[in-house]
Length: 60
Length: 569
Image (cartoon, rainbow over all chains, first blue to last red; front, side, top):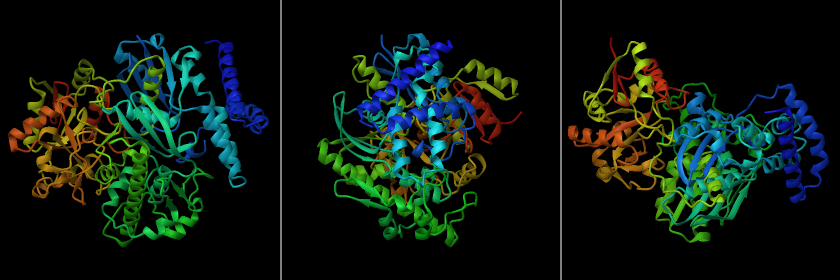
Protein backbone atom coordinates (compact mmCIF):
# COMPACT_ATOMS: atom_id res chain seq x y z
CA UNK A 1 0.00 0.00 0.00
CA UNK A 2 1.49 3.32 -1.05
CA UNK A 3 2.42 6.11 1.33
CA UNK A 4 -0.09 8.39 -0.38
CA UNK A 5 -2.87 5.87 0.25
CA UNK A 6 -1.91 5.66 3.91
CA UNK A 7 -1.87 9.44 4.21
CA UNK A 8 -5.32 9.48 2.58
CA UNK A 9 -6.59 7.05 5.20
CA UNK A 10 -5.23 9.19 8.04
CA UNK A 11 -6.80 12.34 6.62
CA UNK A 12 -10.11 10.52 6.34
CA UNK A 13 -9.85 9.59 10.03
CA UNK A 14 -8.99 13.19 11.00
CA UNK A 15 -12.04 14.34 9.04
CA UNK A 16 -14.22 11.79 10.82
CA UNK A 17 -12.89 12.90 14.18
CA UNK A 18 -13.53 16.58 13.50
CA UNK A 19 -17.06 15.84 12.25
CA UNK A 20 -17.70 13.78 15.39
CA UNK A 21 -16.62 16.57 17.72
CA UNK A 22 -18.57 19.17 15.71
CA UNK A 23 -21.66 16.97 15.91
CA UNK A 24 -21.19 16.61 19.67
CA UNK A 25 -20.57 20.38 19.90
CA UNK A 26 -17.23 19.84 21.58
CA UNK A 27 -15.87 23.01 19.99
CA UNK A 28 -13.54 23.67 22.90
CA UNK A 29 -11.68 20.48 21.98
CA UNK A 30 -10.81 21.56 18.46
CA UNK A 31 -7.79 23.80 19.13
CA UNK A 32 -6.53 21.30 21.70
CA UNK A 33 -6.98 18.48 19.24
CA UNK A 34 -5.09 20.20 16.46
CA UNK A 35 -2.11 20.65 18.76
CA UNK A 36 -2.43 17.15 20.16
CA UNK A 37 -2.71 15.50 16.76
CA UNK A 38 0.64 16.96 15.83
CA UNK A 39 2.06 16.01 19.23
CA UNK A 40 0.55 12.53 18.87
CA UNK A 41 2.26 11.97 15.56
CA UNK A 42 5.55 13.05 17.12
CA UNK A 43 5.01 10.81 20.14
CA UNK A 44 4.14 7.86 17.93
CA UNK A 45 7.28 8.46 15.94
CA UNK A 46 9.39 8.14 19.09
CA UNK A 47 8.10 4.58 19.57
CA UNK A 48 8.57 4.69 23.32
CA UNK A 49 4.95 4.31 24.35
CA UNK A 50 4.36 0.60 24.40
CA UNK A 51 4.23 0.12 28.20
CA UNK A 52 0.74 -1.00 29.14
CA UNK A 53 -0.43 -0.95 32.75
CA UNK A 54 -3.38 -2.94 34.12
CA UNK A 55 -5.84 -0.06 34.17
CA UNK A 56 -4.70 1.37 30.87
CA UNK A 57 -8.09 0.97 29.24
CA UNK A 58 -9.76 3.18 31.83
CA UNK A 59 -7.79 6.20 30.81
CA UNK A 60 -6.48 5.52 27.33
CA UNK B 1 -23.31 -13.72 -0.38
CA UNK B 2 -22.47 -11.31 2.44
CA UNK B 3 -19.21 -11.66 4.39
CA UNK B 4 -18.71 -9.58 7.54
CA UNK B 5 -15.66 -9.66 9.80
CA UNK B 6 -16.03 -8.33 13.35
CA UNK B 7 -12.98 -7.18 15.29
CA UNK B 8 -12.34 -6.38 18.96
CA UNK B 9 -8.87 -5.25 19.98
CA UNK B 10 -6.41 -2.87 21.62
CA UNK B 11 -7.53 -3.11 25.26
CA UNK B 12 -7.63 -6.75 26.31
CA UNK B 13 -8.54 -10.08 24.74
CA UNK B 14 -8.64 -9.21 21.04
CA UNK B 15 -10.73 -11.40 18.73
CA UNK B 16 -12.15 -11.79 15.25
CA UNK B 17 -15.52 -13.23 14.26
CA UNK B 18 -16.81 -14.09 10.80
CA UNK B 19 -20.46 -13.96 9.78
CA UNK B 20 -21.39 -15.24 6.31
CA UNK B 21 -24.91 -14.73 4.97
CA UNK B 22 -26.00 -13.79 8.48
CA UNK B 23 -24.76 -17.01 10.11
CA UNK B 24 -21.82 -17.31 12.51
CA UNK B 25 -19.03 -19.25 10.79
CA UNK B 26 -16.02 -18.71 13.05
CA UNK B 27 -14.96 -16.75 16.12
CA UNK B 28 -11.42 -16.85 17.48
CA UNK B 29 -9.49 -14.98 20.18
CA UNK B 30 -6.07 -13.74 19.12
CA UNK B 31 -4.46 -15.22 22.26
CA UNK B 32 -5.19 -18.74 21.01
CA UNK B 33 -2.93 -18.12 18.01
CA UNK B 34 -0.33 -15.68 19.34
CA UNK B 35 -0.04 -17.77 22.57
CA UNK B 36 -0.01 -14.54 24.63
CA UNK B 37 -2.68 -14.64 27.34
CA UNK B 38 -5.35 -11.95 26.76
CA UNK B 39 -3.40 -10.61 23.77
CA UNK B 40 -4.87 -7.18 22.95
CA UNK B 41 -3.08 -6.61 19.63
CA UNK B 42 -4.98 -6.23 16.36
CA UNK B 43 -6.16 -9.79 15.65
CA UNK B 44 -4.80 -10.35 12.16
CA UNK B 45 -3.95 -13.99 12.92
CA UNK B 46 -7.46 -14.63 14.22
CA UNK B 47 -9.01 -12.85 11.23
CA UNK B 48 -6.95 -14.93 8.84
CA UNK B 49 -7.90 -18.15 10.69
CA UNK B 50 -11.61 -17.22 10.52
CA UNK B 51 -11.38 -16.64 6.78
CA UNK B 52 -9.45 -19.89 6.36
CA UNK B 53 -12.21 -21.84 8.13
CA UNK B 54 -14.75 -20.43 5.69
CA UNK B 55 -12.50 -20.99 2.67
CA UNK B 56 -12.51 -17.24 1.98
CA UNK B 57 -9.89 -14.55 1.45
CA UNK B 58 -9.65 -10.92 2.51
CA UNK B 59 -10.87 -9.75 -0.90
CA UNK B 60 -14.16 -11.59 -0.27
CA UNK B 61 -14.98 -9.43 2.79
CA UNK B 62 -17.86 -7.01 2.29
CA UNK B 63 -17.48 -5.17 5.59
CA UNK B 64 -15.11 -5.13 8.55
CA UNK B 65 -16.74 -3.84 11.73
CA UNK B 66 -14.70 -2.65 14.70
CA UNK B 67 -16.40 -3.10 18.07
CA UNK B 68 -16.20 0.47 19.39
CA UNK B 69 -16.16 4.09 18.32
CA UNK B 70 -12.56 5.39 18.43
CA UNK B 71 -13.71 9.01 18.27
CA UNK B 72 -16.05 8.66 21.25
CA UNK B 73 -13.30 6.83 23.11
CA UNK B 74 -10.90 9.74 22.55
CA UNK B 75 -13.63 12.15 23.65
CA UNK B 76 -14.08 10.26 26.93
CA UNK B 77 -10.34 10.09 27.54
CA UNK B 78 -9.94 13.83 26.96
CA UNK B 79 -12.92 14.68 29.13
CA UNK B 80 -11.87 12.47 32.03
CA UNK B 81 -8.29 13.73 31.91
CA UNK B 82 -9.49 17.32 31.96
CA UNK B 83 -12.09 16.79 34.68
CA UNK B 84 -9.55 15.26 37.04
CA UNK B 85 -6.78 17.75 36.21
CA UNK B 86 -4.28 18.50 37.81
CA UNK B 87 -4.24 15.00 39.39
CA UNK B 88 -4.01 13.52 35.89
CA UNK B 89 -1.10 15.62 34.70
CA UNK B 90 1.25 12.64 34.79
CA UNK B 91 -1.14 10.59 32.64
CA UNK B 92 -1.60 13.23 29.95
CA UNK B 93 1.40 12.40 27.77
CA UNK B 94 0.93 8.65 28.01
CA UNK B 95 -2.82 8.73 27.50
CA UNK B 96 -2.69 11.06 24.56
CA UNK B 97 0.34 9.34 23.13
CA UNK B 98 -1.51 6.06 23.20
CA UNK B 99 -4.71 7.50 21.74
CA UNK B 100 -3.30 9.83 19.12
CA UNK B 101 -0.21 7.80 18.40
CA UNK B 102 -2.05 4.54 17.82
CA UNK B 103 -5.64 3.86 18.85
CA UNK B 104 -7.33 6.68 16.98
CA UNK B 105 -6.08 5.19 13.70
CA UNK B 106 -7.42 1.70 14.30
CA UNK B 107 -9.79 1.81 11.31
CA UNK B 108 -6.88 2.72 9.02
CA UNK B 109 -4.69 0.02 10.58
CA UNK B 110 -7.39 -2.61 10.05
CA UNK B 111 -7.88 -1.63 6.41
CA UNK B 112 -4.15 -1.72 5.78
CA UNK B 113 -3.45 -4.88 7.79
CA UNK B 114 -6.31 -6.87 6.30
CA UNK B 115 -5.85 -5.49 2.81
CA UNK B 116 -9.42 -4.23 2.40
CA UNK B 117 -10.64 -0.85 1.18
CA UNK B 118 -10.80 1.79 3.92
CA UNK B 119 -14.42 2.55 3.07
CA UNK B 120 -15.36 -1.05 3.90
CA UNK B 121 -14.20 -0.68 7.53
CA UNK B 122 -16.85 0.62 9.92
CA UNK B 123 -17.42 0.77 13.66
CA UNK B 124 -20.27 0.40 16.11
CA UNK B 125 -20.44 1.34 19.79
CA UNK B 126 -18.85 -0.85 22.47
CA UNK B 127 -21.98 -1.68 24.44
CA UNK B 128 -24.06 -2.10 21.30
CA UNK B 129 -21.52 -4.75 20.23
CA UNK B 130 -21.85 -6.48 23.58
CA UNK B 131 -25.65 -6.31 23.49
CA UNK B 132 -25.78 -7.70 19.96
CA UNK B 133 -23.31 -10.45 20.83
CA UNK B 134 -25.68 -11.90 23.40
CA UNK B 135 -29.20 -11.02 22.20
CA UNK B 136 -28.75 -11.86 18.52
CA UNK B 137 -27.19 -15.24 19.44
CA UNK B 138 -29.82 -16.05 22.03
CA UNK B 139 -32.88 -18.26 21.52
CA UNK B 140 -35.17 -15.35 22.50
CA UNK B 141 -37.41 -13.34 20.18
CA UNK B 142 -37.65 -10.63 22.84
CA UNK B 143 -35.51 -9.97 25.90
CA UNK B 144 -34.11 -7.37 28.26
CA UNK B 145 -30.39 -7.00 27.59
CA UNK B 146 -28.00 -6.01 30.37
CA UNK B 147 -24.38 -5.10 29.57
CA UNK B 148 -22.02 -4.64 32.52
CA UNK B 149 -18.29 -4.21 32.04
CA UNK B 150 -15.39 -1.91 32.99
CA UNK B 151 -15.98 0.79 30.40
CA UNK B 152 -16.53 1.16 26.69
CA UNK B 153 -16.64 4.64 25.20
CA UNK B 154 -18.64 6.35 27.96
CA UNK B 155 -21.03 3.72 29.34
CA UNK B 156 -20.01 1.10 31.86
CA UNK B 157 -23.49 -0.38 32.30
CA UNK B 158 -26.36 -0.39 29.79
CA UNK B 159 -29.87 -1.76 29.57
CA UNK B 160 -31.39 -2.44 26.14
CA UNK B 161 -34.68 -3.77 24.86
CA UNK B 162 -34.17 -6.54 22.34
CA UNK B 163 -37.03 -7.37 20.00
CA UNK B 164 -36.71 -9.31 16.76
CA UNK B 165 -33.42 -8.07 15.37
CA UNK B 166 -33.59 -4.60 16.95
CA UNK B 167 -31.86 -3.28 20.05
CA UNK B 168 -33.02 -0.09 21.76
CA UNK B 169 -30.94 1.57 24.50
CA UNK B 170 -32.99 2.47 27.60
CA UNK B 171 -30.68 3.33 30.49
CA UNK B 172 -26.98 3.54 31.24
CA UNK B 173 -24.40 4.28 33.91
CA UNK B 174 -21.39 6.22 32.66
CA UNK B 175 -17.68 6.13 33.52
CA UNK B 176 -16.05 6.72 36.02
CA UNK B 177 -18.81 4.87 37.88
CA UNK B 178 -18.37 1.24 36.90
CA UNK B 179 -19.21 -2.09 38.49
CA UNK B 180 -16.48 -3.75 36.43
CA UNK B 181 -13.84 -1.31 37.64
CA UNK B 182 -15.13 -1.66 41.21
CA UNK B 183 -14.55 -5.44 41.00
CA UNK B 184 -11.21 -4.89 39.26
CA UNK B 185 -9.98 -2.46 41.94
CA UNK B 186 -10.65 -4.94 44.76
CA UNK B 187 -9.11 -7.71 42.62
CA UNK B 188 -5.94 -5.61 42.47
CA UNK B 189 -6.21 -4.90 46.23
CA UNK B 190 -6.26 -8.67 46.83
CA UNK B 191 -3.02 -9.04 44.90
CA UNK B 192 -4.42 -10.57 41.70
CA UNK B 193 -3.84 -9.36 38.17
CA UNK B 194 -6.66 -7.23 36.82
CA UNK B 195 -8.51 -8.75 33.83
CA UNK B 196 -7.22 -12.19 34.82
CA UNK B 197 -7.76 -12.53 38.55
CA UNK B 198 -11.46 -11.68 38.80
CA UNK B 199 -12.55 -15.31 38.53
CA UNK B 200 -10.03 -16.24 41.22
CA UNK B 201 -11.67 -13.68 43.51
CA UNK B 202 -15.04 -15.30 42.79
CA UNK B 203 -13.62 -18.70 43.85
CA UNK B 204 -11.91 -17.21 46.90
CA UNK B 205 -15.14 -15.51 48.03
CA UNK B 206 -16.69 -18.85 49.01
CA UNK B 207 -13.98 -19.28 51.65
CA UNK B 208 -14.80 -16.00 53.37
CA UNK B 209 -17.65 -14.35 55.25
CA UNK B 210 -19.03 -11.01 54.04
CA UNK B 211 -18.01 -9.14 57.20
CA UNK B 212 -17.35 -5.76 55.59
CA UNK B 213 -20.83 -4.71 54.45
CA UNK B 214 -20.58 -1.35 56.22
CA UNK B 215 -17.21 -0.59 54.68
CA UNK B 216 -18.36 -1.58 51.20
CA UNK B 217 -21.50 0.57 51.58
CA UNK B 218 -19.11 3.52 51.51
CA UNK B 219 -17.58 2.35 48.23
CA UNK B 220 -20.66 1.63 46.15
CA UNK B 221 -24.02 3.34 46.55
CA UNK B 222 -26.85 1.44 44.85
CA UNK B 223 -29.94 3.45 43.87
CA UNK B 224 -33.59 2.39 43.59
CA UNK B 225 -33.55 2.50 39.78
CA UNK B 226 -30.77 -0.12 39.62
CA UNK B 227 -28.07 2.43 38.86
CA UNK B 228 -25.19 3.03 41.25
CA UNK B 229 -22.40 5.44 42.13
CA UNK B 230 -18.85 4.83 43.30
CA UNK B 231 -17.27 7.04 45.94
CA UNK B 232 -14.33 7.95 43.73
CA UNK B 233 -12.15 9.00 46.67
CA UNK B 234 -11.55 5.26 47.28
CA UNK B 235 -10.62 4.56 43.65
CA UNK B 236 -7.93 5.68 41.26
CA UNK B 237 -8.93 4.30 37.86
CA UNK B 238 -9.97 7.78 36.74
CA UNK B 239 -6.65 9.39 37.64
CA UNK B 240 -4.06 6.64 37.24
CA UNK B 241 -3.47 3.29 35.63
CA UNK B 242 -1.51 1.26 38.17
CA UNK B 243 -3.81 0.05 40.95
CA UNK B 244 -7.35 1.29 40.47
CA UNK B 245 -7.70 2.04 44.19
CA UNK B 246 -6.49 4.87 46.42
CA UNK B 247 -4.72 4.96 49.78
CA UNK B 248 -8.08 5.78 51.34
CA UNK B 249 -9.25 2.26 50.42
CA UNK B 250 -6.28 0.83 52.30
CA UNK B 251 -7.22 2.97 55.30
CA UNK B 252 -10.70 1.43 55.13
CA UNK B 253 -9.87 -2.25 54.44
CA UNK B 254 -6.29 -2.51 55.61
CA UNK B 255 -3.15 -2.81 53.51
CA UNK B 256 -3.31 -4.42 50.08
CA UNK B 257 -2.23 -8.08 49.85
CA UNK B 258 1.25 -8.64 48.37
CA UNK B 259 0.73 -10.20 44.97
CA UNK B 260 3.36 -12.94 45.08
CA UNK B 261 2.77 -14.36 48.57
CA UNK B 262 1.36 -17.93 48.49
CA UNK B 263 -2.17 -18.25 49.86
CA UNK B 264 -2.73 -19.91 53.23
CA UNK B 265 -6.37 -19.62 54.25
CA UNK B 266 -5.53 -21.09 57.65
CA UNK B 267 -3.98 -17.77 58.68
CA UNK B 268 -6.00 -14.83 60.05
CA UNK B 269 -4.38 -12.52 57.56
CA UNK B 270 -5.46 -14.45 54.46
CA UNK B 271 -8.86 -15.14 56.01
CA UNK B 272 -9.29 -11.35 56.21
CA UNK B 273 -8.66 -11.10 52.46
CA UNK B 274 -11.10 -13.97 51.83
CA UNK B 275 -13.68 -11.97 53.82
CA UNK B 276 -12.99 -8.94 51.63
CA UNK B 277 -13.53 -11.13 48.54
CA UNK B 278 -16.76 -12.51 49.99
CA UNK B 279 -18.08 -9.01 50.67
CA UNK B 280 -17.10 -7.83 47.20
CA UNK B 281 -18.87 -10.79 45.62
CA UNK B 282 -22.03 -10.24 47.68
CA UNK B 283 -22.17 -6.50 46.93
CA UNK B 284 -21.61 -7.20 43.22
CA UNK B 285 -24.37 -9.82 43.16
CA UNK B 286 -26.77 -7.38 44.80
CA UNK B 287 -25.87 -4.62 42.36
CA UNK B 288 -26.41 -7.03 39.45
CA UNK B 289 -29.74 -8.08 40.91
CA UNK B 290 -30.79 -4.43 41.19
CA UNK B 291 -29.86 -3.85 37.55
CA UNK B 292 -31.68 -7.00 36.45
CA UNK B 293 -34.84 -5.94 38.29
CA UNK B 294 -34.67 -2.51 36.66
CA UNK B 295 -34.21 -4.18 33.26
CA UNK B 296 -37.31 -6.24 33.91
CA UNK B 297 -39.27 -3.14 34.94
CA UNK B 298 -38.21 -1.26 31.80
CA UNK B 299 -38.63 -4.08 29.28
CA UNK B 300 -41.19 -6.42 30.81
CA UNK B 301 -39.86 -9.52 29.04
CA UNK B 302 -39.48 -12.89 30.78
CA UNK B 303 -36.05 -13.27 29.16
CA UNK B 304 -32.72 -11.66 30.00
CA UNK B 305 -29.50 -11.59 27.96
CA UNK B 306 -26.26 -10.69 29.70
CA UNK B 307 -22.92 -9.49 28.31
CA UNK B 308 -19.79 -7.65 29.40
CA UNK B 309 -17.00 -8.96 31.60
CA UNK B 310 -19.16 -8.90 34.74
CA UNK B 311 -21.56 -11.32 33.03
CA UNK B 312 -18.82 -13.97 33.41
CA UNK B 313 -19.54 -13.87 37.15
CA UNK B 314 -21.45 -17.15 37.13
CA UNK B 315 -22.38 -16.93 40.82
CA UNK B 316 -24.11 -13.59 40.22
CA UNK B 317 -25.85 -15.04 37.14
CA UNK B 318 -27.25 -17.89 39.24
CA UNK B 319 -28.62 -15.43 41.78
CA UNK B 320 -30.25 -13.32 39.06
CA UNK B 321 -32.03 -16.40 37.70
CA UNK B 322 -33.12 -17.47 41.17
CA UNK B 323 -34.13 -14.10 42.59
CA UNK B 324 -35.20 -11.82 39.73
CA UNK B 325 -38.45 -12.02 37.77
CA UNK B 326 -36.78 -13.49 34.69
CA UNK B 327 -37.67 -17.05 33.65
CA UNK B 328 -34.71 -17.53 31.31
CA UNK B 329 -31.22 -16.04 31.03
CA UNK B 330 -28.74 -16.35 28.19
CA UNK B 331 -25.04 -15.43 28.47
CA UNK B 332 -22.95 -15.63 25.31
CA UNK B 333 -19.84 -17.73 26.15
CA UNK B 334 -17.34 -14.98 25.27
CA UNK B 335 -19.17 -12.36 27.33
CA UNK B 336 -16.06 -10.20 27.81
CA UNK B 337 -14.45 -7.89 25.27
CA UNK B 338 -13.63 -10.72 22.86
CA UNK B 339 -17.36 -11.20 22.40
CA UNK B 340 -17.64 -7.66 21.06
CA UNK B 341 -16.14 -8.95 17.80
CA UNK B 342 -19.10 -11.28 17.35
CA UNK B 343 -21.62 -8.54 18.15
CA UNK B 344 -19.91 -6.14 15.75
CA UNK B 345 -20.00 -8.75 12.95
CA UNK B 346 -23.70 -9.46 13.54
CA UNK B 347 -24.54 -5.74 13.50
CA UNK B 348 -22.55 -5.38 10.28
CA UNK B 349 -24.52 -8.25 8.74
CA UNK B 350 -27.77 -6.51 9.71
CA UNK B 351 -26.63 -3.37 7.90
CA UNK B 352 -26.24 -5.54 4.80
CA UNK B 353 -29.83 -6.74 5.17
CA UNK B 354 -29.22 -10.07 6.89
CA UNK B 355 -31.50 -11.31 9.67
CA UNK B 356 -30.62 -12.96 12.96
CA UNK B 357 -28.43 -16.06 12.99
CA UNK B 358 -29.55 -19.38 14.42
CA UNK B 359 -29.32 -19.48 18.22
CA UNK B 360 -25.84 -20.37 19.40
CA UNK B 361 -25.72 -24.07 20.31
CA UNK B 362 -21.98 -24.68 20.44
CA UNK B 363 -18.86 -22.73 21.36
CA UNK B 364 -16.77 -24.80 18.90
CA UNK B 365 -16.18 -21.89 16.53
CA UNK B 366 -12.40 -21.73 16.58
CA UNK B 367 -9.24 -23.31 15.23
CA UNK B 368 -9.50 -26.69 13.49
CA UNK B 369 -7.06 -29.52 14.24
CA UNK B 370 -4.59 -30.58 11.57
CA UNK B 371 -4.36 -34.31 12.36
CA UNK B 372 -1.71 -35.18 9.77
CA UNK B 373 0.53 -32.50 11.28
CA UNK B 374 -0.28 -33.80 14.76
CA UNK B 375 0.81 -37.31 13.73
CA UNK B 376 4.04 -36.04 12.17
CA UNK B 377 4.96 -33.86 15.15
CA UNK B 378 4.07 -36.56 17.70
CA UNK B 379 6.18 -39.09 15.79
CA UNK B 380 9.10 -36.65 15.62
CA UNK B 381 8.78 -36.10 19.37
CA UNK B 382 9.09 -39.84 19.89
CA UNK B 383 5.65 -40.15 21.49
CA UNK B 384 3.67 -43.41 21.60
CA UNK B 385 0.87 -42.72 19.13
CA UNK B 386 -1.85 -45.07 17.95
CA UNK B 387 -5.02 -44.57 15.97
CA UNK B 388 -8.20 -45.60 17.75
CA UNK B 389 -11.48 -46.70 16.17
CA UNK B 390 -13.58 -45.10 18.89
CA UNK B 391 -11.97 -42.02 20.50
CA UNK B 392 -14.72 -41.86 23.14
CA UNK B 393 -14.22 -45.49 24.17
CA UNK B 394 -10.45 -45.03 24.32
CA UNK B 395 -10.79 -41.99 26.61
CA UNK B 396 -13.42 -43.71 28.76
CA UNK B 397 -11.10 -46.69 29.30
CA UNK B 398 -8.30 -44.38 30.45
CA UNK B 399 -10.61 -42.49 32.80
CA UNK B 400 -11.91 -45.74 34.25
CA UNK B 401 -8.28 -46.69 34.94
CA UNK B 402 -8.00 -43.48 37.06
CA UNK B 403 -5.96 -41.61 34.47
CA UNK B 404 -5.99 -37.86 33.77
CA UNK B 405 -6.58 -37.42 30.03
CA UNK B 406 -6.31 -34.42 27.72
CA UNK B 407 -8.69 -34.27 24.77
CA UNK B 408 -8.62 -32.17 21.61
CA UNK B 409 -11.53 -32.60 19.24
CA UNK B 410 -12.95 -30.41 16.47
CA UNK B 411 -12.69 -26.61 16.40
CA UNK B 412 -11.40 -24.90 19.57
CA UNK B 413 -13.73 -23.10 21.96
CA UNK B 414 -14.89 -19.50 21.70
CA UNK B 415 -14.62 -17.77 25.08
CA UNK B 416 -12.69 -18.41 28.29
CA UNK B 417 -14.11 -21.84 29.15
CA UNK B 418 -12.95 -25.25 27.93
CA UNK B 419 -16.17 -26.97 26.93
CA UNK B 420 -14.97 -30.34 25.69
CA UNK B 421 -13.01 -29.32 22.62
CA UNK B 422 -9.68 -28.60 24.42
CA UNK B 423 -10.12 -30.09 27.90
CA UNK B 424 -8.40 -32.12 30.59
CA UNK B 425 -10.70 -34.79 31.98
CA UNK B 426 -10.61 -36.99 35.08
CA UNK B 427 -13.12 -38.90 37.15
CA UNK B 428 -14.27 -36.65 40.02
CA UNK B 429 -14.64 -39.61 42.37
CA UNK B 430 -10.84 -39.92 42.69
CA UNK B 431 -9.81 -38.40 46.04
CA UNK B 432 -6.47 -36.95 45.01
CA UNK B 433 -7.36 -35.72 41.54
CA UNK B 434 -8.08 -32.13 42.60
CA UNK B 435 -4.78 -31.77 44.44
CA UNK B 436 -2.82 -33.37 41.60
CA UNK B 437 -4.41 -31.13 39.00
CA UNK B 438 -4.09 -27.94 41.05
CA UNK B 439 -0.55 -28.42 42.31
CA UNK B 440 1.21 -30.44 39.62
CA UNK B 441 -0.55 -29.92 36.30
CA UNK B 442 -2.27 -26.53 36.48
CA UNK B 443 0.05 -25.08 39.17
CA UNK B 444 -2.63 -22.80 40.55
CA UNK B 445 -4.06 -21.71 43.90
CA UNK B 446 -5.54 -24.56 45.95
CA UNK B 447 -8.80 -22.68 46.60
CA UNK B 448 -9.78 -22.65 42.96
CA UNK B 449 -12.57 -25.10 42.15
CA UNK B 450 -12.84 -27.50 39.22
CA UNK B 451 -15.97 -27.84 37.17
CA UNK B 452 -18.01 -30.93 36.36
CA UNK B 453 -19.26 -31.79 32.87
CA UNK B 454 -22.45 -33.83 33.03
CA UNK B 455 -24.63 -35.19 30.28
CA UNK B 456 -27.54 -32.75 29.94
CA UNK B 457 -30.11 -35.55 29.94
CA UNK B 458 -29.18 -36.72 33.45
CA UNK B 459 -27.88 -33.48 35.00
CA UNK B 460 -30.81 -33.02 37.39
CA UNK B 461 -30.06 -36.37 39.09
CA UNK B 462 -26.87 -34.90 40.49
CA UNK B 463 -27.34 -31.12 40.55
CA UNK B 464 -30.13 -28.77 41.58
CA UNK B 465 -31.28 -26.02 39.24
CA UNK B 466 -29.30 -26.86 36.11
CA UNK B 467 -30.25 -24.20 33.61
CA UNK B 468 -30.70 -25.21 29.98
CA UNK B 469 -29.66 -21.82 28.57
CA UNK B 470 -26.55 -21.05 30.65
CA UNK B 471 -25.19 -24.43 31.75
CA UNK B 472 -24.14 -25.60 28.24
CA UNK B 473 -21.65 -22.68 28.25
CA UNK B 474 -20.69 -22.91 31.94
CA UNK B 475 -21.90 -19.41 32.76
CA UNK B 476 -23.81 -20.22 35.93
CA UNK B 477 -23.49 -22.38 39.04
CA UNK B 478 -25.77 -25.04 40.53
CA UNK B 479 -25.96 -26.81 43.87
CA UNK B 480 -24.67 -30.35 44.16
CA UNK B 481 -27.35 -32.72 45.49
CA UNK B 482 -26.48 -33.74 49.02
CA UNK B 483 -26.52 -37.44 48.19
CA UNK B 484 -23.70 -36.91 45.67
CA UNK B 485 -21.48 -34.41 47.51
CA UNK B 486 -19.11 -37.08 48.77
CA UNK B 487 -18.64 -38.77 45.40
CA UNK B 488 -18.37 -35.42 43.58
CA UNK B 489 -15.97 -33.92 46.12
CA UNK B 490 -13.39 -32.95 43.47
CA UNK B 491 -15.88 -30.77 41.57
CA UNK B 492 -17.85 -29.38 44.52
CA UNK B 493 -16.78 -25.98 45.77
CA UNK B 494 -16.57 -25.22 49.47
CA UNK B 495 -20.06 -23.65 49.36
CA UNK B 496 -21.52 -26.89 47.86
CA UNK B 497 -21.89 -25.26 44.44
CA UNK B 498 -20.50 -26.40 41.10
CA UNK B 499 -20.00 -24.58 37.82
CA UNK B 500 -21.76 -27.28 35.84
CA UNK B 501 -21.45 -27.78 32.10
CA UNK B 502 -24.57 -29.57 30.90
CA UNK B 503 -23.24 -31.31 27.80
CA UNK B 504 -25.39 -31.89 24.74
CA UNK B 505 -24.54 -34.00 21.72
CA UNK B 506 -24.78 -30.90 19.56
CA UNK B 507 -22.59 -28.69 21.79
CA UNK B 508 -19.69 -31.10 22.39
CA UNK B 509 -20.22 -34.42 20.60
CA UNK B 510 -17.07 -36.23 21.78
CA UNK B 511 -17.51 -35.19 25.39
CA UNK B 512 -21.14 -36.26 25.29
CA UNK B 513 -20.09 -39.68 24.03
CA UNK B 514 -17.38 -39.94 26.71
CA UNK B 515 -19.97 -39.16 29.40
CA UNK B 516 -22.17 -41.95 28.09
CA UNK B 517 -19.18 -44.29 28.30
CA UNK B 518 -18.38 -43.17 31.85
CA UNK B 519 -22.01 -43.79 32.83
CA UNK B 520 -21.69 -47.37 31.54
CA UNK B 521 -18.69 -47.71 33.86
CA UNK B 522 -20.06 -46.21 37.09
CA UNK B 523 -23.63 -45.01 36.31
CA UNK B 524 -22.56 -41.38 36.75
CA UNK B 525 -22.22 -39.47 33.45
CA UNK B 526 -19.90 -36.90 35.02
CA UNK B 527 -16.26 -35.96 34.52
CA UNK B 528 -14.08 -33.24 35.94
CA UNK B 529 -13.43 -30.85 33.05
CA UNK B 530 -10.69 -28.21 33.13
CA UNK B 531 -9.01 -26.29 30.37
CA UNK B 532 -6.06 -27.64 28.40
CA UNK B 533 -3.52 -25.04 29.41
CA UNK B 534 -0.82 -24.47 31.99
CA UNK B 535 -0.37 -21.55 34.35
CA UNK B 536 -0.46 -18.21 32.54
CA UNK B 537 -1.06 -19.80 29.12
CA UNK B 538 -4.03 -19.41 26.79
CA UNK B 539 -6.06 -22.59 26.21
CA UNK B 540 -4.40 -24.79 23.56
CA UNK B 541 -5.85 -24.36 20.09
CA UNK B 542 -3.80 -26.01 17.33
CA UNK B 543 -2.54 -29.60 17.28
CA UNK B 544 1.00 -28.40 18.01
CA UNK B 545 -0.20 -26.38 21.03
CA UNK B 546 -1.88 -29.52 22.34
CA UNK B 547 1.24 -31.64 21.86
CA UNK B 548 3.38 -28.92 23.41
CA UNK B 549 1.12 -28.96 26.47
CA UNK B 550 1.42 -32.75 26.70
CA UNK B 551 5.21 -32.53 26.54
CA UNK B 552 5.36 -29.99 29.38
CA UNK B 553 2.67 -31.19 31.78
CA UNK B 554 2.31 -34.59 33.48
CA UNK B 555 -1.11 -35.71 32.27
CA UNK B 556 -1.33 -39.45 31.64
CA UNK B 557 -2.71 -39.56 28.10
CA UNK B 558 -3.82 -37.33 25.28
CA UNK B 559 -6.40 -37.75 22.56
CA UNK B 560 -6.13 -35.60 19.41
CA UNK B 561 -8.87 -36.40 16.95
CA UNK B 562 -8.48 -40.19 16.60
CA UNK B 563 -4.86 -40.27 17.80
CA UNK B 564 -4.27 -41.60 21.31
CA UNK B 565 -0.91 -40.68 22.86
CA UNK B 566 0.28 -42.26 26.07
CA UNK B 567 3.16 -41.66 28.42
CA UNK B 568 6.12 -44.00 28.30
CA UNK B 569 8.57 -45.05 25.65
